[in-house]
Image (tube, rainbow, N blue to C red; front, side, top):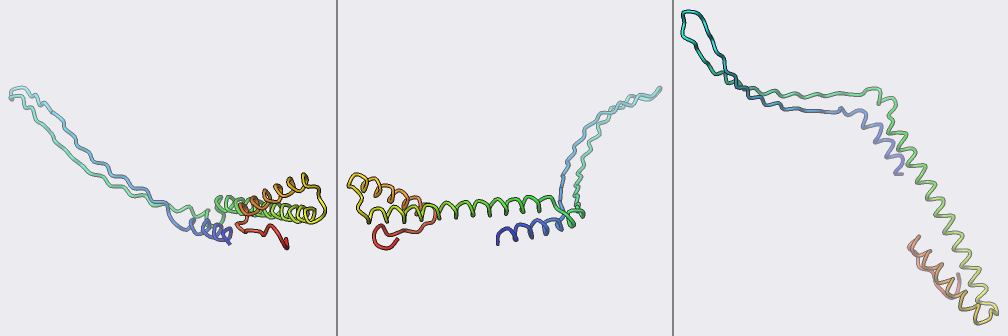
Length: 142
């Protein structure tokens, strides 16, 4: 199931390092004035350039034992199971309400009531189709 895969991925991701890279390009320009007694003053320009490349690789080995993402994945799995259960409960309630309405329609319902019952049956069938993707027969067996 998806929840087991999420938990496995959270655990496996802890074995991978985090990698960080930096590139630093420097260009320096400086002027220097040398003044000595008895010697002509000298003005010189110093052009310097440099490149620094840094790569940092770090492992968080404590995450191999316990990763907080495992809790998030487990919580998501519980939430998904609860949503699935609520959906199944709602589908079951609607299905049996539809059966009850079809039974009332098969009996001797007054025409005014029959119309409202028929509309409700169609409404329930539309909701059931939207939630489950299954088309139900309007007449005949429920």
